Image (tube, rainbow, N blue to C red):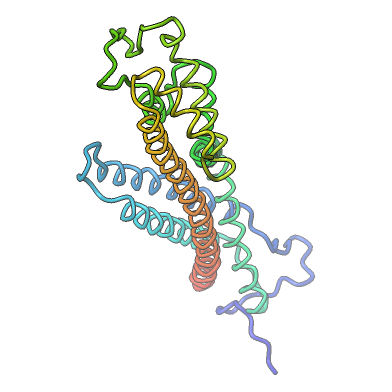
Length: 310
């Protein structure tokens, strides 16, 4: 079978001429030019997408796009950015490379594909290095979000149990405070911080709040609030608020139910954060794979256009 070559025009053979050096199989200048073009276009499109995304958000509830719509739009924009930038870089790498005379078409096709892939790889590495701190910050923020969600209840318990005000979870502090609100049948005066001043023992509500926090934390760990702990807290509440023991126990059960809901919400938030991070990684993989394909394909297209020009 007759072999086909890429040189469409008649050429004077340079075989045996020591003054003519064979063209290199890799045109690094073209590859770097394509990589620079791809990285630059990628940077421009990233900033454009960031601006469009921020303009669609609103600090007011009910305004702006939803989180789901924003997520889908971000995925599509990242994919479009990869395809457009990779296609430009691949085409430049193929169009600007050195012309390979007397080279079989299969070899030329492979070289052009490799040039496009290398241009995409260099551009991707350069972009990743440029946004390394940003990417690391996003990843760290996602991990911290999950950890904070899982440990939110525990953090609140730790700070309250230590006798310190909890600035991270006001809802759980509020639940503990409601346990020791005075009842209607307590006639003793109430101090400015909401605690009874009937006796020196009763005025110290911090200890009771800390105990309640530790008991609730243990109940969450074991899975239920024991009847003994319920009676114990109910008696403390009754002594300090003027309620009956039964009313104190009712408060304990109601507060613990809300506490469990808060813990469940924290776990659900952490699970959503985990799934979001996993989906984002998968879509990023798909977009990068698409970019590699389009860079290689457009490099072969640019190479063919280059060989048609003398």
